[in-house]
Structure formats: C-alpha cells, structure tokens
Length: 601
Image 1 (cartoon, rainbow, N blue to C red):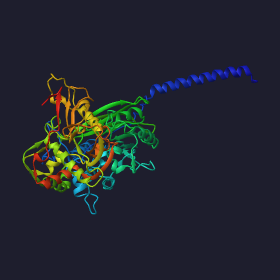
Image 2 (image 1 turned 45 degrees about the vertical axis):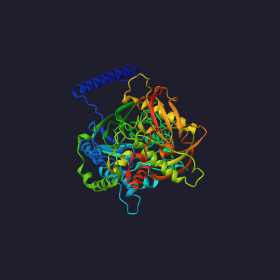
Image 3 (image 1 turned 180 degrees about the vertical axis):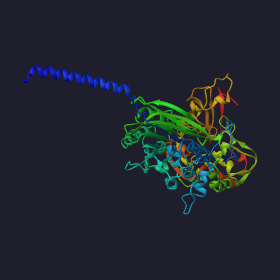
Image 4 (image 1 turned 120 degrees about the horizontal axis):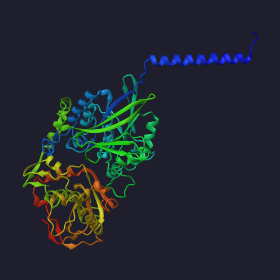
C-alpha cells in the first residue's frame, strides 16, 4: 500500500500517545513501588573557645600582701593553676581538637610576683629566668593572647623578652610601628581545627589592645609605637580574615564594653570599645572582652550592617573566671557557617589547683614570698586605709611625704629648687594595713599596689584649684541635714578610688553640699589664701602625669623631672633609711569634708 501522509501522521500520533501513556504509567508505578529517598541531614559541628583576661600575675590562689591563701566575702578563688584545672575539664568534655584557649591581656603586671620577675630577678638579665606566667601559660596550652596596656609597664625590652618566652603569639593589630604604621606584633592567629570526616574549621583570632597605652606608658612608647582605635583596626582586619577563608572570627580585645573613656579629649579613640566594635564592624562572631575588670557572662549585640548577633563575654579578672564561647556550625557547600554562639562562665572557686602548675612553679612562688616578707623597719602604731577615701589618713600622707622628699632632692641645684613641692596620692586600697611592729615589703606593697613611677610637674595655683575641684567630683552631693551613707558617699559617677587624689602641702575643705565644681573652700598654702598666679611643683605618679584619669592641666604641664624607679620602691627605701615608721614624721591634716562649713566627720 502506498504511503499516505495523513494516515502516517495519525498512526504516529496514536503510537506516540500510547508510548507516552505507557511511560507515565510505568514511571508512576515505579515511583509508587520505590521507597522515597531521604534527604541527607546537614553536617554540624560545635567548637569551644575558652578565654581569660586581666590575669595580672595571679599564678596561685595566694595573697602576697597578707601572706595567706586568698579569700574574699564572695568566696572567689584566683590563679592560673585553677584555670588550668578548668581548661583540662573542658578539653576532656569537648575534645581538645574542638577547643581553643585565648587571653585578652594584662598578664605581666599587678602582683609582687610580676614585679619580682621584672625588677628583682628580671627576665631580661643575662641568664635570667623564664617568667612564671609564661611557663604556666605554655604548660596550660594557650593558643594566643592579646596585648594589654599593662604589658608595657616595664618597658618594651621586658615585653619583648616575655613574648620570646611564649609558645603562642601576643596579638595586637592596633599596636603599630610609629614610623611605618605597620603591625609591631602579630595582628591575628588563623588556626585550623580538624573535623573528622569533614573539612577543617578555620578560626581567626584578632587581637586588639588599648589606645590608652600612648598616654599611660608614654615614656616607653612615644616615637616607637602608635595605637590606633580598636574600631578602625577591626574594620580593616576582619574583612581580610574573612577573605583568607576564616569560618569563625573571634576578637580578643583589651577594651571594656561600655563605650566610655578615661582620658577626656586627649585621644580621638574610645577606651572601652568592645560593644561598639560588635555593632559597627561586620563579620565578627564573638568578642572576648578585657580591661574593665567586670564580669559579663554573655552580652548580645546586633551588628548594624548585617543584623547578626555578636556575643560578648568578659570573665572576671585575676583568673577568677573562665569564659566559654560555644560555637555551633553547619557545613554548607564545603564551607562552615556559624549558626549560633553562646557564652557562659566557669568559676575557679569550684576546682582545685592543677598539681602540674603547682609543682612546676612552686620554687618561683616561694622566692617571691621570701622577698615580700623582708623586714625593712618598725612601725610605732598601726596605719590603715580603711577610711582613707573620706578622711585624711596618715598612711596616705606617708606616700606624699616620700614623693615630696624625692622630688625636692632631685630638684636641688636647679632653677626650680626654691619652689614649694606638693604631692599627689590616691587611696588605692580599702584594706591596706601596716601593723604596729615589724614593717615588711608586703605591707608597703599593699599600700602602693601599682608599679607607678614619679614625675615632677610645674603648675600654678589656679591650675591646682581646678585639679582639686575635679578630684572632689568623687563625692556624692549630700544636703547639710541628710544622713551620710558611707557606702554611697564616694565613687560618684562610677569614679574609682584610684582617680581620687589627695594633694599635700595645701589645706582645704571639700564642701559636699555644693555642686561639683564649687566644692573647694578655704584653699591655702602656708596658712595664706592660695595665690592663683604662684608656681608650684607637683610630685605626681606617671599615670596621672600622662593624663590618666583626665585630671585638668597636669598632662600638659611642664615636666621638670622624672625617673624609672617605682614609687613603691621609694617608700621602702624611705622606711628603711628611717628605721622607725612614726606618724609624727609624715602625718598632717591637710583636708576635710564639710557641708556648708560644718565638718562631716
């Protein structure tokens, strides 16, 4: 039969339709018969970043000033030996391969132990010891630590020697060479944590330190190092770390979280910038906060750009707490992404010292104990700082007397030798005591807990008046007929005790019934009203001389003299030379609190 095109197309259509129907029916039947495939669940992983901060030389749970085990009313315990025990527990719980351990700075200053290995048996000496904090941190297995401002207190040589003794990097992305502006320390750590059956998790730790170093340790760093703002440097480095493949970005910042600064307008940067960094710099997962000596178990900050949550945590200082950042991740297209970050704290009072650390460092600890228990003199009566923040206490007059004597001697033969020498001092401690009888180095150390040195500045009477008015803001305004609450009377506006100053050599009243700025009354020198145009030499510690506390005029005043010997050492030398510590040799009543002219006490 000849081919008929119309019949061919009809037959083709029928055949194709039947084939399609058969295929659909067969496929449907096959689907009905075959089991439904299960979607493979996403790969998940959790890692833990542990953190400490502001260790300040607290190696063991020991109070060198009391020559006894450390105790406080809250039941806290201190020391890296306790931290070591907690770290081992966490590593056993989570697996060491799933953890990192970092620090946020201030390690080598703060106790007689750190002073001893900086000045008495210095690590910088030829054949000198390995710093006990380095030995402890190496043994515990730290991965990185940010630079704190107190790392610079003993000079750059001591810091570099300490750095060389560490098995991990000291990080400071905003500690730069003053000339080249290139990083003077490692800016970051980038570490791979291996995951069984999956690609490694790349964790970046960016270290940031405090811009205040430029003020507080000006004598050591000026012309050598510069310290740009934390936010600015984080904005530069975080994108770089992400471009380098970092799955997780942690910032270790020696900076508090509340956005405040203690230096007024002396620097264009924020001192306590951690929350600002979290808010303004995209790409950060968590921030280990330091510097402020407060406890923040977990604080969540929303980033302005991404809307993502950044988790902040600050463990309590002196190795009393350990922060844990638990970071949950999901594997997506070959890369890990952070799903959630949570933070919590572990308490060192709940564990005992790690015997490894005790055995390793006991001999260095005992050397310090022997040093601080040296007897350097005899006291005729007990001196205490218990009420020194609201009464003119003889024990603070001891500090000012020593400073006056040192500066007077230093200026002998100079053009300023005939000017009156005044002195500044603060009630650093509320518990310091020099008992009647033997006077030891530890008693004097407890009186002056900081490693400050002495500076002589030239100020006028008017500038000193402004200085005292600023200091008097420390007190809460209290009406003449109101009851006086000692606990509420001081630290107005959160000002710490170390930012309240006595000034010796002048007499004055502080009228707390008056508003701040109008409180200094009856200000006199040698019994005569203070001449605003007269010139005086103010013996002041280097922290204040460089602008610490933002007291007016002093930072910009002419410097007449300075030295590198600690004020604490000068006090010990003075007491040793005298042999007998008698208040009649140094005590004077220079100031008192009043309300409308009536003494408060």
